[in-house]
Length: 299
Image 1 (cartoon, rainbow, N blue to C red):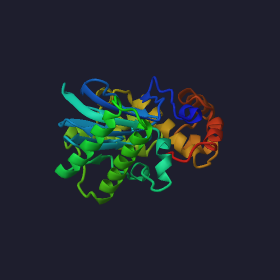
Image 2 (image 1 turned 135 degrees about the horizontal axis):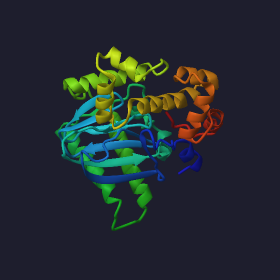
Image 3 (image 1 turned 90 degrees about the vertical axis):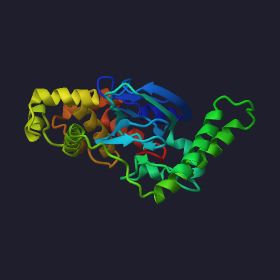
Image 4 (image 1 turned 45 degrees about the horizontal axis):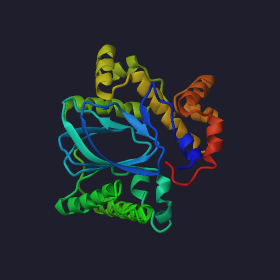
């Protein structure tokens, strides 16, 4: 993996969102966990594909909660804040593929298989019918079998060919699918979705627990409590994390550092510099210089 790419996309979010680092180009895992494990919202420095082998899961992506069904596909890019939010102790079984987008460079010259991840309104959940389930299950099983192969002849090539086929199938299905993802309709969930959506759409405003509580007609203490339960984070930590993510996006638009600070809700320039460096490892200007030498596949 390109070390510059890795360093650029590794945020130091220990006190904010759990941000998983990735030192490989590609890996696949078969995972079974209890849904009360690791449910805190988090981000990645890689792209991720879930193939759900369980149902009755509640999964938050950005500000939307989805009710997952068995055989659903979940597509996540680096900008997607996500996590399991079930409050019951269920087993969640899935295949998980994690990959550096540069791993697709060999075949992206023929077709941009990252398109389904990179569009502004890219689908996060794809529901599969019976035939599609068999196709994808076969591909995931094949890719997983390459993790402990009996024959290692040309293994990296076989793995990449199978992965390319998986990505093409995902893009083909996503472009032809008209089945909407199922969103959770629980009233408490809907209220939290509205709060998260408001925060994400008003990051440049002077957000506070008091102002948010007043807007949604609840007490500050109750807001703090339900927010922590729902996301695993305090309101303030969530807001600062989202502002840092927004700032990294704005810096890619060649705006001045002052403009980025203002647009991302940091009205104290010095505070923005300190906070940005604390959570990205770079001062904003250093981050911008690093961007100029990055590989093409980025969000």
